[in-house]
Image (cartoon, rainbow, N blue to C red):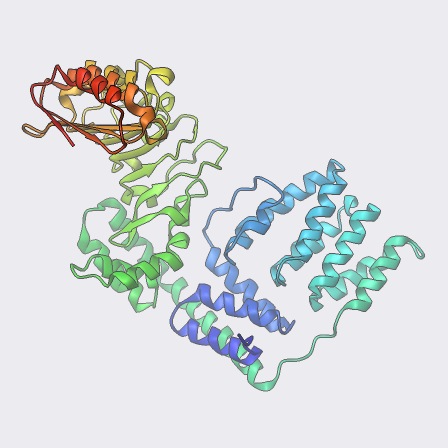
Length: 492
């Protein structure tokens, strides 16, 4: 496939700006930068990047390899400051090999003008003058050859001792720079048009922001008010904001689902990032234009920050099995009063739910509860609205404990799934609904037999047993004996 020319890429960027696809504009500008190191392109990239990430929380740093695993252009400005702070710590602790490795990895990244200023600042630190580290920095700047780095590097060269290794390497770096070629008349005109469009859009949004904030506040004050969302959608559509289109589409009884999917796929992570860095923004489900179901990031290692007003529309939180400290206190925050579904919660963290009387209706726990928190079912009896309970990686004792608790008669639905998906059990309280047990693997025979004996606490009702795995006659005899207390048993 032919690589688009500079002129074509800048034209694509302007067309994407007209469609308000600003993340796409950034992608095209980065492609243009890799063909021409013209300063107007670099300034547009930096300005647009700052605009698109304004108000977004920084991304967390875990390892020095994280930078090179970020696929989206807009991740860089949110990630780079913390990453470079991490690199400074490594240098101050004299972990030279790691610092050199990371700087070498920078050289393998596609050219990006947003690297230049922070790397120049980092190169001024005393640790950067260690010989091998300084040589690695020189290699990075030779690979990037951003003309804007020339003057700062020349100024740095004047501070170096003549004849030193650092001076010689920097001299070679300066000689490697390719002179900046001015943009042609047509390309310069396109860059000027992009700058005018960006300035006009920024000015319009600054002027209208109080209205925007007031309309958002109406939605957050009453998330069930569809009319408030539609008024906000009208306002956003007047400005060309794609979020307005998403709200309008999802509030329509006949939504264009392919268009909804594309909007969420391309922009949902950015809209969801307002919830905070502790949310896996790419896993957010939107309803009527706002986040309704979110997944917390297991990578988050700090206390959960106080929920902002953006959390008012969230109804479902997937805890993803992470051991967040003080989860119950966080969920009790008034801005999370709409959360009624919790998924993949460690039992030890669910212990405080009952005391705070959370409004949870559906709860998913990661078992085995009998080993992690054997008294938890008594605690969950204090949740006034709990109607559905799902146990992942459960064991037979979990089923028996729940069946023996007062929850058994309250729950609309109890579901348990065994370790390695060996068995499954569903108990529903619908009239005359049978207890449903499924054998999925041979390893589930003995546990499922114990479960059938323990599940009688849900009421001696009809039982339906489904065997999806070829069971031996002995296994079937064991299951039939365990099913004998039930009034009616169906086999399939």
